Amino acid sequence: EVAELLSYEPNAFLTKILRQKADHTPDKRAVVVTGTPAVEYKGKFGILALVKIAERVQFKTFEFAFEIEDAARAVPAKPTGKAAPGPGENFSRAERGAVIRESNLSVVAACSRGRYHASARKQCEDRFYFSVNTPTGWNAFAVADGAENARHSGKGAELASVAACKYFLHYFSNKNVCDFFEKKARTLEEWSGHFAANFYNDSYFLVNKYRNGLELDKLIYSVVYKTYMTIADEVAMKSKVSAEPAALSDYDSTLTLLAFKKFDFGYFLISFLMGDGCAALFDWNGSGRVMPLGTPDSAASEGTAACLTRPGEVTPEKVKNKTFFAFAKSFETLILATDGVTDPFFQTARDFSDEKKWLKFHEETLKKGANDIKGASGLFSRNASIEEKVASLAAWIDFDSPGHNDDRAMIIIR
Image (cartoon, rainbow, N blue to C red):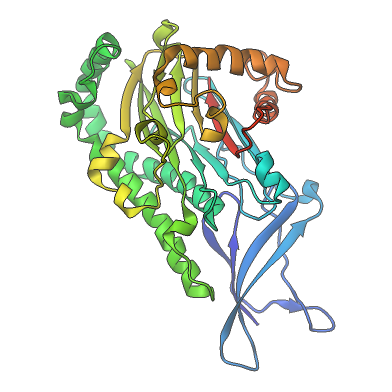
């Protein structure tokens, strides 16, 4: 008797999908679970089942896999623009795209397994997720990098990227918060003007009166804390049903979160960087300049990246120090990326504050590189469809860089 079946559904949290007796094969030696695949591609996916053995009053836990042989029979995902790959030791890549209707911006995202994990037959441990076109106008994006030596780091990165976006949209769609932004519209506009005039020469901007007066740091801390607790709950569940207890460090992952909304005065952007990922805005307000949206931890602590799963990192003060607010009347490109993408081009702490290196990355590595890599020419083409842009990023993200074999995840908005 299959008492309860728990499935790690792609793009979702642990979901109960069956609580009933299942059919048996004629020889009664196998259980048959039927249903419609909820994925777009074929592959193997793990399932965790609590099975009641009829002869004994107890539950046992089994881990097994099923495979979708015909991807054409799978139900296509709804075109919401959301994306985060599912788990599984054979997972190697994913890509998604969407159009933000209000601003007519294209969003393309991809993650890919690096050569090291491919040769070792391990899964890609980097993940991405995004949600756009929400009723409140907020758009949320995240990339996460699972730590190399953590047993379930891929799952940790998946949970981090999904939960961060979902909790951000949950808190920022609250009626009180929406009313708060309406009441503070003039303050935001003043802050926007101050930002435009002083960003490149005001080193005290991040602690100015506008930030303290809006009290947004409390909201961001709630988002990060709830994301941390999502992973902690997963650890507790895993330990409860598994013979081998899990620890938070088994799910070590970085997190780069970016969200923005378009107001009358332009875009208001919020970013949070935990670990060695990065976020940056190019051609800010038509100036041709680059705006890094925060500082990767590797640049701040000489190569030692913090992980979201470390309790000591999730404190109000530390979250505040890793949160960045920005404004833009316009921009050409926004990017989020894990260190597998940036390491070949930003190899020291100083590099991340070098505007020339950022410009070179955007103009030569991304733009020119897209034309040089087979199948990637549509990435920056104005006439390319969203499907062509997604395919182009999927091709570009596998660029060859000797000595750099890490997994990669990236989101481009333009």
